[in-house]
Amino acid sequence: MPEMAVPSAVPPPAPTLPDQIVVRLSNVTVSYGKNQALRDVSAGFPTGAVGLLGPNGAGKSTMIKSLLGFVKPDTGRMTVLGHDVTEAPLDIRARIGYMPENDAHIPGMNAVTFVGYCGELAGLGAVDAMQRAHEVLYYVGLGEARYRNVETYSTGMKQRIKLAQALVHDPDLLFLDEPTNGMDPKGRDEMLELIRDLGHNKGMNLILSSHLLPDVEFTCDRVVVMDKGRVVAEGPIAELKGPGGRVYEVRAKADADRLIAALKALGMDCHATDEDVMRVFVPEGLSVQAVFRAAAREGIQMRHVRPSVPTLEDVFARAVGEE
Amino acid sequence: MPIHDQGYRRFEGLRDARGTAWLVIARSAIRTMLRNKKFLGLLILAWAPFIVRAVQVYASTNFPQIAFLAPTAKTFREFLEQQGPFVFFVTIYVGAGLIANDRRANALQIYLSKPLTRVEYVAGKALALLAFLLFVTWVPALLLLVVQILIAGSFAFVQKNLFLFPAITVFAFIQVAAAAFTMLALSSLSKSSRFVGVMYAGVILFTDAIQGMFWLMTRSSGASLVSPSASINQVGDVIFRLPPRYDTPWLLSLVMIASMIAISIVVLERRVRGVEVVA
Image (tube, rainbow over all chains, first blue to last red; front, side, top):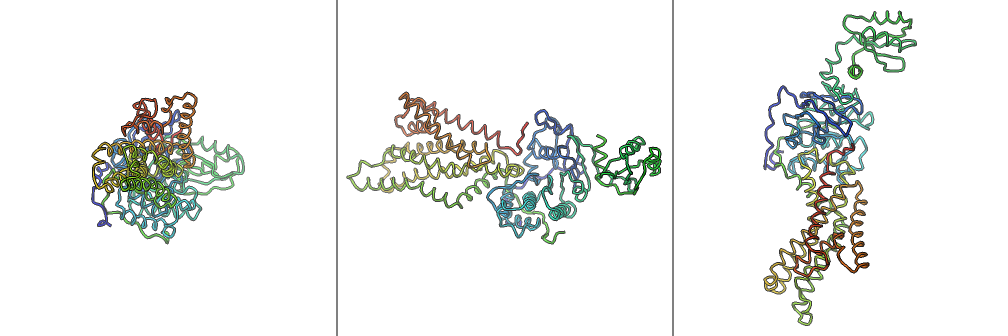
C-alpha cells in the first residue's frame, strides 16, 4: 500500500497523551435552547474499548457530537487524542472514525465507491482508498455485496457499511453511536464480535455509545454511565461490578414493595428486574441472613434466594438509582 | 470471529495534504452526473446554439451576400443570453440534489466527521455545478471567438473588440455564480431534490412574471430589480458595452445580484451543519 500513496503531506505528529487518556471533558455544559443536554460533565476516556452507557436522552449522542465539533458547548473544554476540540477539529477528525446513530450514507453510490470516497475525503489517495475500501468491506462482512447500491441495503447491512466508512482511513479512535440499532439477533452478535475484535485484538481505541447493557458489557472493558446529562459512574466494568457473591436474586410471594422498603432501610440496594424477581445488593458488614430476617419481620414469605453474579445492569441501576 | 473476517490491517501509507477534500467532492459529483445519459443529452443540446453560431460566422465570412450576419460584440452577448435556458435546466438538473440528497441520506454528518470544513464541502458542491454551467456558457462563447479567428484567418476582429474576452469571462461568471449559489442555498433548505427544482423554477419564473406584469401595467421597466434574470441581463448589457435595456441603474442591478449571492451564502452557513439542532 505505501508505494501507491500520494506523498504530498503527512499529518502532524500527535501530541503525547497524558496518562493514556484519549478523550477528556472538563466541566462541559451543552444546551439546546433551554434544555441542558450535558450538565457540567467531567470525564476521561482511557485507551481501549470504553462504553458510554445511559438511557435514551442521557446525553450520550450529544457528548459524541460535541467531541466531533458538531455542537458547541456553552462552557468547558474537551480534548481528543491530545488536541483541543475547538482549536484543532480537523486534526482530530483526521484521526477518528465516526459511526452515526441514524441511517447515513452518500446517495447514488455502491458500497465500495462510498467507502472509497470516504477514504479519499479522509485524505487517502484514490488508489489506497479503493484498496482499503475492499479490505474493510470484507472485514465487516459486506464483501459479496460491495457492488450493490447502498440504498438497497437492509438495516443490518447499512449498520455494517457505516462501520466500514468509519474504519477505511484507519483511525486511532472510533466513535460508535448505537451500532446495533435495528439489527436482527444474528447481525447484532456479528457486529458486537467485530467491535470486540477491533477493541481487543486490533488495538483500536473506541467509545461505544449504547443504552443496551449487554452490548457494552460484551465489547468494553470500561464504562462511563450517564443519566440526565451527567456522568453518574465511571471506571473498569469489573471494578464497578464489585466482588461476586454479594448480589442475590430474591423472589417474594407478595408485597415486594414492602420488602424492598425494608431492605433499603437496612442499607441494601434493591431493584426489580421482573414482575416478582428483585436483585438485592448486600453491603459490607451484612450477610444474606439480614434479608431473611427483614422478610420475617415484615411477615413476607420468601420463595427464592439465589447468589448471583454482579452485572453491568446492577452497576447501571445503582448509578442511576443513586441519582 | 465471523467466518467472513478477512482481517483488519493498519494503514501505513501516506495521506494527502489537508484542504483537498473539496476537489474530491467536486470530482465525484461531476463523475456522477456524467454517468447520466439524459444529462449528457442536455449538455449536447446546450451546444447546439454554438454550432448554429459557428455556421453563421463561417457563412458571413465566406459569402459576401450574407455579410450582414458577420459577428459583432452583440453577437456574443446574444449568444450568452441564448444560453440562459440551458443555464436554467443544467442548474436544476445538477444543483437541485447536490445538498438536498445529502440531507435526505444524513450524509452531512459523514462528510463533516472527516477532516474537511463546511466551506470545503460547499466549495466542492459549488465547483461541480459551476463547472457544468461554465461548460455551457463560458467555454462555447470563448470557442466561438476562436472559431471566428480561425475562419477569418486574422486577428482583426479580436483586435477591434479587445474587451470581448474579459466581457465574456466576467458576464459568464456572474451568470453562473448567481445561478449556482442560489440553487445551492435552495438545495440546503430541503431534503427533496424535486421540491428544490420546483422552488428554483418558481423563483426564476415568478420574479420574471412579476416584472412582466409591472411592465404591462406601467410601461416602465423599473421593476427589473425584482427579477434575477433581468438584473443579470441589465449588467450583461453594460459589460458588453451595449445600451442597458431597462430603466433601472445597472449598479443597482449589480447590487441585487451580489445581495442574492450573499444571502445564499448566509443560508448555506446556517444550513450546512453536521447536526440539525431544533431548540
